[in-house]
Length: 245
Image 1 (cartoon, rainbow, N blue to C red):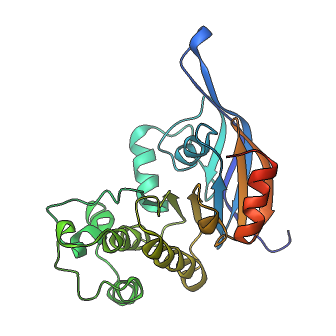
Image 2: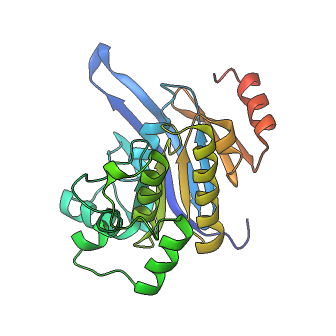
């Protein structure tokens, strides 16, 4: 498509766990490009390879073969130190179970990626981010003093604070009630629209996928279908038709 920029490019990605007769082939030569400024949802049943794909695209796992580039940098050949530095500079993470440090305040959890990198937050951007995620009056609270939704808001702010090339979200609403899930999805959607934040979201939830600009469907380690922005009903129909339950 004219005018689009690919910030993540994967080609021929294969991931095999184990060897010989017990080997499990989790990914079968996946090709995918993630376009800048879009929210891409990755759907599929348990065992389809969607989390494996996300971990490889994010540099948390290495493919058995194939190529992955982030912002023009080939990451599959990087050493551990260089890969850690790349993740710090280019990647934000949002996890299902928040992964906050319990001894730190919400503010310190949010700025943790910058603290590790020896940097300080841009005060204007930080204040705007905190306002957008609704945490202005919760910055001194520790995770145990926050609701699940508030903890996920902290996690989202932490992923966004360094303004990474791409944010990866692994089932970001999987541990939340339906109302809070809706609030978190709206927040993630607004980060794409307001900040132009490229985001990849692994989800099994059709409601979550309906917030995306693009939906990739995985089955048995392969991308078997791709659609543009779709309604929840359309997504459920595709899942039913393709037997991806």
